[in-house]
Length: 129
Image (cartoon, rainbow, N blue to C red; front, side):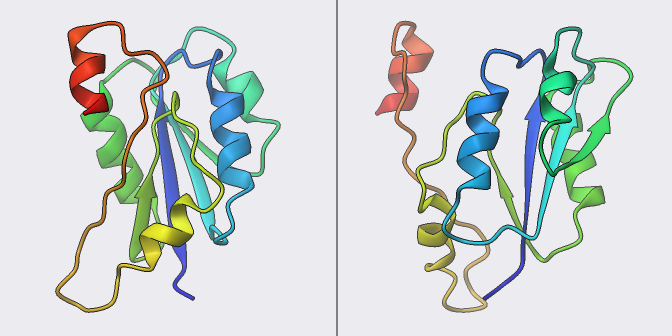
């Protein structure tokens, strides 16, 4: 079984981070390290995240999603790195199913289907297709 680091970038995610972290903690595939990259949140995101066995890395100011991803990749310790946004909830076998596809050295990335909870805006509808 390959060791996997998982990171969650977040900014003012107090309304979704608990459900996201609960889904990460209950994965059928063991996650070796979980990193939460907080991008200068002003709400209770960090207060909620501190209740979980995760490594928290905080940006002093909001730098954007790309900066969070770069920070995560600098800090992860494993070759395999998974990402989940703070407003996502992973199905219990999400990581297990993704890892099944790493069957050769030619495969360097895997993605899965995203089911939008709210498909109200054109961007939401596009992502749900």
